[in-house]
Amino acid sequence: MAGIYLHIPFCKQACHYCNFHFSTSLRYKNEMVTALLKETELQKDYLNGEPIETIYFGGGTPSLLEISDLQILIKKIKETFPVSIEVEITLEANPDDIHKEKLVGWKKNGINRLSIGVQSFFEEDLLWMNRAHNAQQAIDNLQLAIDHFNNITVDLIYGHPLLSDLKWKQNIEKVISLNIPHISCYALTVEPKTPLFKLINENKKEDVSPGKQSEQFLQLMQLLIQAGYEHYEISNFAKPGFRSRHNSSYWQGKKYLGLGPSAHSFNGASRQWNISNNNIYFTSLGKNEIPFEKETLTITQQLNEYIMTSLRTMEGTDLNKISEAKRFELRAASRKYIDTGKMIEENNLLKLTNEGKLFADGIAADLFFNQ
Ligand code: SF4
Image (tube, rainbow, N blue to C red):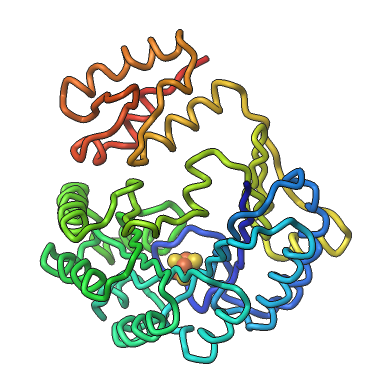
C-alpha cells in the first residue's frame, strides 16, 4: 500500500510563521494544474504498481483550487494508479475558503477527509499570525464543514506570546465540544527567513518562550486524553478510528509519491524532492522533465529515520525490527532516559513518557547510530 501527496503551492497571504513553499500569486494556477497532470503521468511507475491507499492535497492552500481542478487531478490519479476503493482523500482547507458549494463539490469528487487550518479561535491571535481568516469564519465555517463531513481534523498552534494558558484551554475545549475527531497541534517555531523571524529580530514582535510551550503541551495532552483522544503521535490526537491514514503511512515507512513543487517522494530505498520554485517546476514539466534532487539512504540512515519517526508514535520503537547488535547498543543508549523517567521499555518497545515527549527530537537524535 502506498500514498500520493500533491503540493498546491498557492496562498492568499503569507502567514508570518510559515516556511512551507507557496506563492501568493495565483496567476499560474492553470499552468500548475497542467504540470501536476504531466508529473502524474511521468511518475506512473514510481510506486511499482502498489495500490494507493491515501491521497493528500496539501500546501499551500489546496482549498483555493476550483472544484474542476480537483476533479481532473483525482480523475488522472485514478486512471494512472491502482487506487483502492477505500481510499482516504484528504484536502487541506482554510476556513475562509469553506462554503456550502465547495463542501458539496469536494464530497462529490471523492474527498472524504478535511484538514482545516483553524490555528486559533481568537481574533488577535489570527491577526498576529497574519492568517487570511478571522475568528468568526473559524467558528462558522468549521460548523458548516461538520455539517457535511464527519472525518475532519483541525490544526491548532500553541506557545505564541499572545496565547495565555486560559486561551489555549478555551481553544482546545472548543474543538472537543464540537466533537472534532482528529486534532493536530503544533508549537509555534520561529524559522529563519520567515517574516516572524525578522519581526522578532527587529523587536517588533515578542519571541516565543520554550517554558510556555512545554506548559501548553502538557495542558494539551491532559485535556485531550481526558476527552477520549488517543495521543498517537507527538503532534496528533484522534478519536478511535480517526487516525490519519496518510500521515500514519509516513511514520510506518510506507512508500509515497509527492507531486508538485517542493513535494518529497520515498520508494523504500531513496528519497527525492522536487524543486521549490513554481516557475521552474511548470516550465520543466512543459519539457517533460521533473526538476528534483535525490538521495539514496544508507542502512544506518534508514534505521535512524525509523527511530526518529517511531519514537514519536504511541506504539514506539520496536526493538524486534532492529538487529541484535544494534538493539544492544540502542538499549544501552536509552538507559539514561529510562532512568530519568523520559522513556520506558515494555514488550520490546521503547516509548517516550509524557515528560519525554517534551524532548522527543533531541532524544531521538541522541539515539541515532553513527554507522
Ligand atoms: S495558509 Fe498554510 S501554507 Fe499558506 S502561508 Fe499560511 S501556513 Fe503557510
